[in-house]
Amino acid sequence: MMPEDDEPIRLLHRLLAQPPKKLPPDLEGRVAEESLTRLRKTLPGLAVAYALPWVTIYPIVAAIAGIRHWTAVVPIVAWLFASFTMFVDYRWRTRIAKHGYADPISPASSIPALALLSAIALTTTVAGPFFLLPPLAIATSKGLVLAGFRFRTRWVVVTATLAILIPTALAWFGIHPIYGWRDGALVIDGAIGLSPTIFCVVVTFAHLAILLGASLFASSYRDTLDAVETRNLLSTWRLSQLVGTEQRSTDE
Image 1 (cartoon, helix red, strand yellow):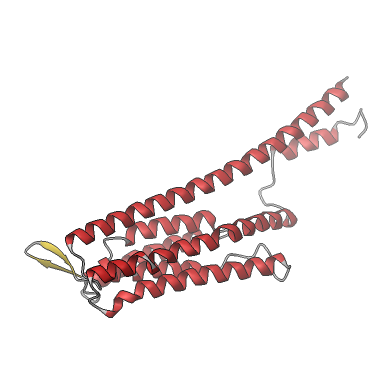
Image 2: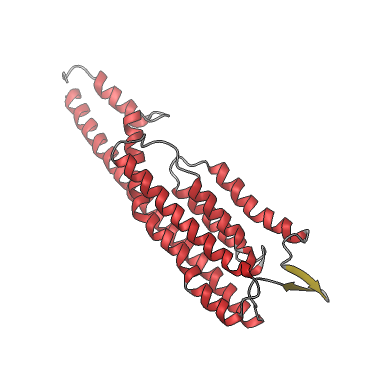
């Protein structure tokens, strides 16, 4: 760089102040690779976290409350399948991207999201669409929107909405007859027998667990974003210091 030539410094100033609207393909590939790395680290744990309550706590509750219908096993099968699908799909995509068998910036698969939201809808066999379903749909859709690289946000929102509306409509029109009214009181005719004590304890515990899990996930994701933003700001600051030094040398 010639001392009397300040055009490179001006160009560097413009690049720092005005980043491109669309990332170059090689840089976008690096972003996708980092996203896949995060998915590889977090999704196996999430898959276990989704399935664990349904193979531990739920069978105990069902044994205590009593099984009234064979549909009591539907949530277990649905959540195990969703967790297995999520684990296998992202492990497979991470592996083929790591070995260069596929484009690393290809859109994320919709299969795990569909399996998760379907499992949420099938949870209504326990206590209907008015309990468990809404917070589960909100927390899961939020996680899918936040963590899904190049994921179709509108598709997630629409699918989560349908996961709530379809079971509600089926219960409303009596096709999924889990609710009834007797003397002005709502009666839950679920797949397992729910006494008032068991219902209050289970629903409260489940809602608190969903709240805690969603908060921890959001906190972890925020920490990741803060670390990335700090690293980017530090790199920009170092470049600005270098540009300032070069600019002062040129002026002198």
